[in-house]
Image 1 (cartoon, chains in turn cyan, green):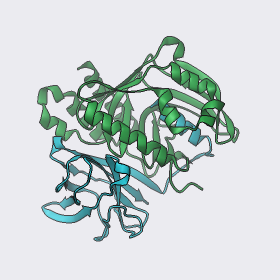
Image 2 (cartoon, one colour):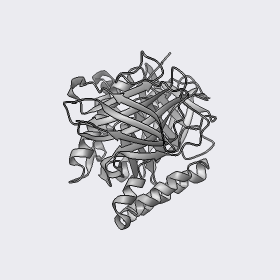
Image 3 (cartoon, one colour):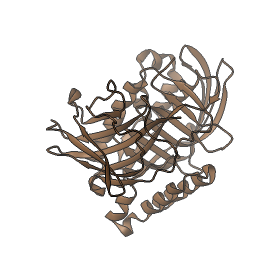
Image 4 (cartoon, rainbow over the protein chains, first blue to last red):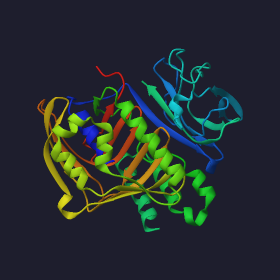
Length: 145
Length: 235
């Protein structure tokens, strides 16, 4: 990834000095067959999802064609806190997709939105592929102060 | 086995620097025990390895409009190779080919010295531990460990210097949406940059996070701010 460094160096050449970003990406979990597509996220930050610019990114690798929705469930304790049905587009037949789950009806590209606000990221997540062969998924949170 | 054990060493260094990445050390220790503990340990290791962003610390920030469309194909290609080929052989990436995939031909022509230098480097190899984790390595010939040139980026000339160890080595954690690469102490790249706008930056890189949102470089020295080059909301 030397070239990634160079790309970053090329990009940072345009900046003037260090600042504190308002919004940041927090990579959280990977869900694979090795963990039965389920994992717990310990979250110690005082940040939750409730702003229009905030979102959950669900990155998926799945065998095409997609044959129906993929389900992501969020448990807090023993209670199901959130439950999203991801309608993953078959964009260019790419094996990977990035789904955004946000509060804004304009942003979601897989038809899932955040409804029970605020959403605290911590808890237990699991994925159900339905009729699809999902190879892996990754969760990240894009959060703002 | 030695490499896996050193993965743990690198993670502990993050702990010293940031004082907040305790789980990295735990994850790396788990990864180092994989051959002994087997599948269950692998399942527990499915968490990031780079330090989380600190919401209170300043970072150098910049933006590359459309950078997302350059990086996403790289992440997809890496996902395919790791998932479909990773069990049989390391996944290799040639530095020059990566640059060519994210830069136009005009940029490559303007930066011939850089392009040639990258072409002389060995491929960066990724060896899979499980779906999400693995080790990475780049052996560097003695006469290629230092590069200094003027790089033309964004219509301006920047003085860039890169220092590489004899072996750039570390561990990675990935999903389809991100690749995080943590480098072991003593086996990290350093760079310095002087730009016409007055920016001067020199840093040793201990972690790189490449995602569709941007590229984040974390530095080894706590007094040197991290770098984030975003791809969205460029002004």
